[in-house]
Length: 140
Image 1 (cartoon, helix red, strand yellow):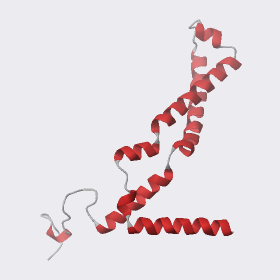
Image 2 (cartoon, one colour):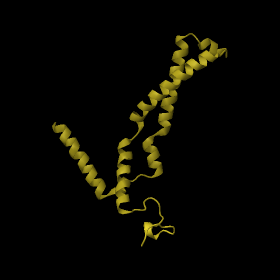
Image 3 (cartoon, helix red, strand yellow):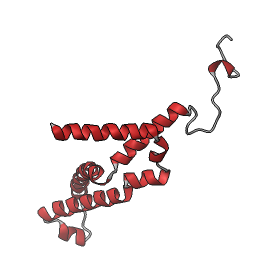
Image 4 (cartoon, rainbow, N blue to C red):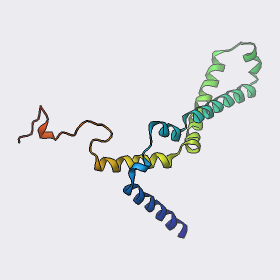
């Protein structure tokens, strides 16, 4: 229970710090891509698909047929759906291993805090009130 309270206190401190200085936590596009870590996740998914395909082919004694390029529809179908399942599972595991969700969440919160102050963030267009727009239906 004490550890949980300490964790909640740390989260509250982070939220207070984020509200006080949101610009420190904003990420550029490149930093967001680094946080998502897509190349490592793609490699991890490819490794999972390849290993599941090799495992399936070796268990059904089909590796010799692949070497001889005697590929049947049943073999392709069997490998394809098993690889897709392996990629779906590996993608979920890869998201938990390789994504920096703390940085992405702080960026979202910082963007929200900045939007509270600057209504036009991130669009540089000026904010026009509803009744000042050219085709306004509001009576002034």
